[in-house]
Image 1 (cartoon, helix red, strand yellow):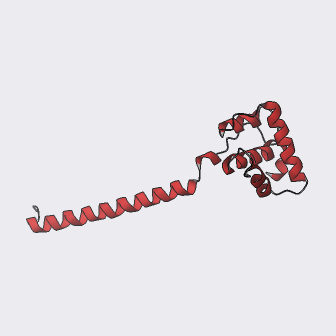
Image 2 (cartoon, helix red, strand yellow; image 1 turned 30 degrees about the vertical axis):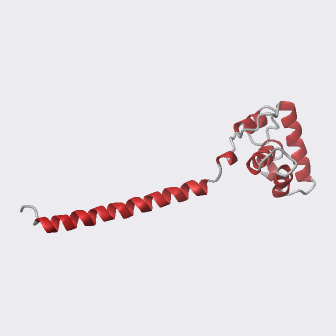
Length: 128
């Protein structure tokens, strides 16, 4: 059975190359969409400790993982308690994030999200 004549082979190779190019472009588009959907890296929350553990050690460890390094154990426990008290008072998670992410605060949205969600996880899991 030998090879097809030269023009036929060229056509087959060209067709195969076009398929690879289209397939590669589709794979790249899918990968880019997956990366875009993953969201900002700063929003990654490390789960350290257990839900409702009221830990003044685990909560600041989560904050440090997110790049918030100035909170020590005492400050973090106070922050977690204050955020939960506001949740008990009727503040929504979104309101707390906006309050922490305000123009007069040193935190960005991702850091505020980590602070609120971490406080809920450790200090008031009924809102988590």
